[in-house]
Length: 506
Image (cartoon, rainbow, N blue to C red):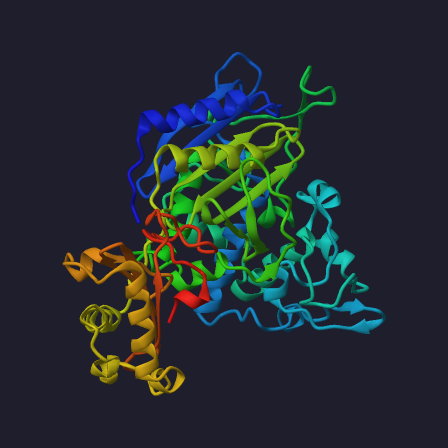
């Protein structure tokens, strides 16, 4: 999964993205690209405090709602430890909590809060100013119950207040402030030395960016006082550096690898849970930088699938005075972090542009899949039988009970013969392993058979029993290019396309 990046090319991409981005309405902008090794390229412009000091790679910015990923990871870790159940009603941990929809009490689970499908309404404008509110004040808002705008579990609504309740649940379970739990579970073990929940936790002289607002499209900036640490700090209070967020992002992204970072902190499965869709979101209109086929909210993160880039994960942060975004490519782990110290600055848009550029400039390879061992064995056997024109009954021991019932052997053999008439007989082949085209998952394998006037492409799909068996076989004529990815399968390592004309398949 580690694909080393070209530092010079990557820095050039970051510089161009910042220079070309018309919405850079912040006194200071900090952009970093990272891979499994950490930050490999950084570019910054401007002054973090408008005092003549230039922004640096070490400058601390407030990351706002990116903090939610830390809260989600903490809740999942407690769930894995058996101390918290995400499927349990919130009232189990916070007695007296009531959620009402159309004058009826509805139980809301911790997981529904964490995945923004609780039915609690959007509250960004209000919540931004409540970050420093006391726990007693926020608790008083729930005294008479919470009115929902939708039944729990039905649809996506981004509720900061709802997410903060997850923090209260964590505190009920561990008996101390959630910020301390996050710090001891993740910030300290991962050595995120530039990450704090409050600005006064930094040593004097630390390069901390001030927040600014503009009301005249960046002609002037007004300094915005830091909103304090309070009941909603767990969902938006963190300050951090690009290096720390790159390290945190890779910690999460490595859940998809065979060797996840620090598995004792949170299992790979827990990290994947954070990065999969729990609550679907309508797909936005395509832009120059992204063309999504799916989008959703996971647990403290936004997973998406882009037609050009493949699977990505991101989360933005925004508070009066700050804007931020972290995003990464699931298949490679390559990502970017963008900070700006003005809420007029669209960190997410710049991050999308920079991320797409980094992936393209470094020719990040498409996704590769490791099929089951039996897929290779069965594929090699079927390959031999097909090339030699032999009945496929010779592979009966590696096929499932439906294989010959669905298409009798004589019929399939006849259809393959028709295909070879169109492309010519198979020629002398390279080794089977050299002709493997790719796989969409571990139960699938595709390979190529070169013929006198073209080529055939074969696909097998296995059923995942204790001893996997081949349940289907498709043979088709390859397209003219032999290199175009299959339509509908972006990001796969596919070296030959297959004609979709059913008259040419078996």
